[in-house]
Length: 90
Image 1: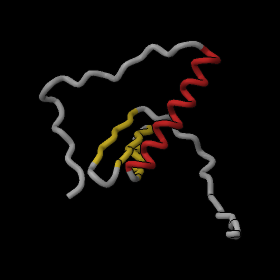
Image 2: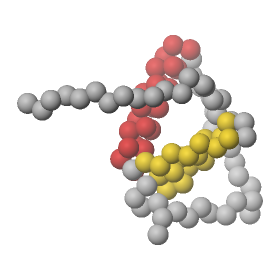
Image 3: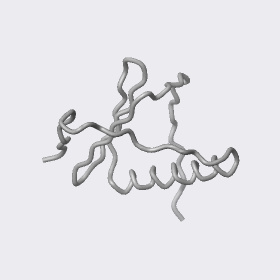
């Protein structure tokens, strides 16, 4: 049986309110950029891990809606010609 090891994790005690989210994808990675105030935090992950994040968000949103009611929202619309298509990867 494989021995379990504990990995120390350092948690930043500061909470950041996310005001903007951008997601880009290449064949081998996703880049998630979160804006909080004048700071941008970027996270890179594999497509499988991004899918797990999506499933976890779906699960938590479903639980939230069971407790507090349905959330009515949609993605903001981007006007044509205002953004270039993001290209990532090689």
